[in-house]
Figure 1 (tube, helix red, strand yellow):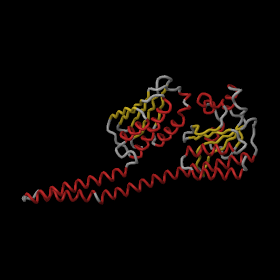
Figure 2 (cartoon, helix red, strand yellow):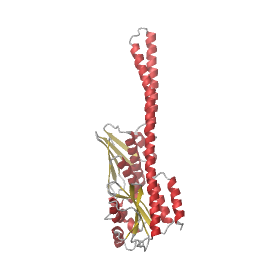
Figure 3 (cartoon, helix red, strand yellow):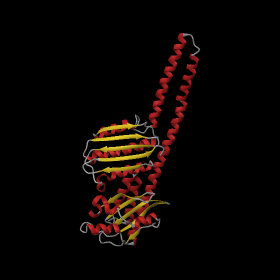
Figure 4 (cartoon, helix red, strand yellow):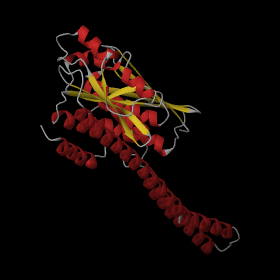
Length: 368
């Protein structure tokens, strides 16, 4: 086991190099458990409405993995309630955990003697992201130095979550600034050429000499072709890599890359802001990944319905399906999809049944 100082140093170095949120929390949790006296750990993100979502776990006892982590995620929870009431600001021993107790009662031989846990909020300044919980066999109360270690690691994770969030915002600002530059280029180049076409066509109306008239038409044709090339080049720069020819073309190529036979149906006029298009493209990519990895099918359908106020997308497969409470194999991909849809202000619904395939519906407001 590493010393507390060395462990904190190793975790800090790991966190400084990470830019992906999911990889970061999983790696930090693994380092903490592997090099301390803690035996297992799990981490919840909690949204603005107070709803917890399991985002990472490591070395859970079998009783907590049963039925899609049901006992770990469902039922009353003291630490979540305290977190939502803003009454939790440091590492704390939980003397009675109804979730662990239910798991122990139902699976007494499969809980690895885990009966209690400690909890700590993930904080960065005034912002809070969720909870980090740890536990060990035959341990009802953790010592102060163990709680101090847990608190230090939680602070590091919280600070890294904030850094990743700010980095994403800065990248978005960079994109906005780049688009503003392209808009200026559009005005300075294409607009001038269109102005030239207008002047030349107006002058051509008064020409009677056939040779001069032909020269004017040649000038208009050449200038318009040049303007078209400039316009295409600028538009392609505005699109993210892979979406230069639109989201339909991109997702069909992605399905082909996965070896899936994809049918795409579009109803209505598809026209949304670029950041929504990118987010929806990533959602569809994740959906197709789930089809390939888990459904047992090589076919998928994507239906896009464009309404005046929202965009609806349905991703379907005819694969093996799953019971809603047993979707652990899908959990990581579905979690990513939920995060992306939530950031777009939308809603994601999942319907599945064993032997009847899976359907994922996404609704996003057009003006998100």
